Amino acid sequence: MVKKLKAAIFTFTSCFGCSFELLNMKNELLKLFDKLEFLRFNLIGRNKYSKSYDIAFIEGSISTKKEQKKLEEIREKAKFVIALGSCACNGGVNIVKNYRKNAEKEVYEENIFESRNVKPLDEFIRVDYFVNGCPFSHQELLEVIDAIINNKIFQPKTSSVCSECKLKLKGECLLTKGKICLGPITRAGCNAICTSNKMPCYGCRGLAPDANINAYIKMLKLRFKLTDEEIKKLLEPYGFLERLEVKNNGNKDR
Ligand code: SF4
Ligand code: SF4
Ligand code: SF4
Image (cartoon, rainbow, N blue to C red; front, side, top):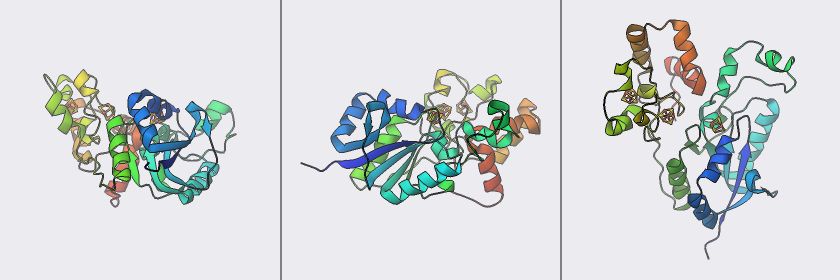
């Protein structure tokens, strides 16, 4: 019998939605149980201590010193680290906190959790695989696990959502209908699930490495007459604004 890989799921600052999404995988998840032994998976009541893991799935972004320390400990114990979902991959929605002064005080009156700026995992540790999306893409996760188990190469998508959308979209592009769609700058891999259902892409998979974000911003100004402030707000979630700064001041590929 093939030995199962020891796996664990860890949660940091997030809505816990990616853990729930694992349950939504239903039969696909049951099939994963044949290959992976989940030592830690809160939603199914597993919480076994282990000195090491083959795979650590990590959901959530890092927003406290305590979380950073725990993340670094997990990295030391895990052969492979998978960033699961947008919070872990690009800071998710949480990252908007970085642009609000006194966010903690407004909500809790004081910063009781000693929270700091929100960062994705790779700001602190080496991440082996990124499974983007809010929540993550089932297909992409299965491909990553297959790559780990069968020693294959996983090739993340570098093109934009438009590349998938154009194959599925029946009718006009949403931009031409006056709707702001972040598809041109967002990493493909979701099979354009929102736009092919006539909902504009809100960018949950983060910045596509191949995207021309500066040209996109120009288009927003010309076509939609957006101000710099409105564009900034639009690009705050999912780390676009942070990536834009990195892109303009030195590249950081992933
Ligand atoms: S990526 Fe989305 S669904 Fe997953 S934990 Fe973050 S906010 Fe929740
Ligand atoms: S609807 Fe959005 S994702 Fe689809 S082609 Fe137009 S801009 Fe791209
Ligand atoms: S279309 Fe955009 S918002 Fe919708 S799942 Fe894909 S990347 Fe996320």
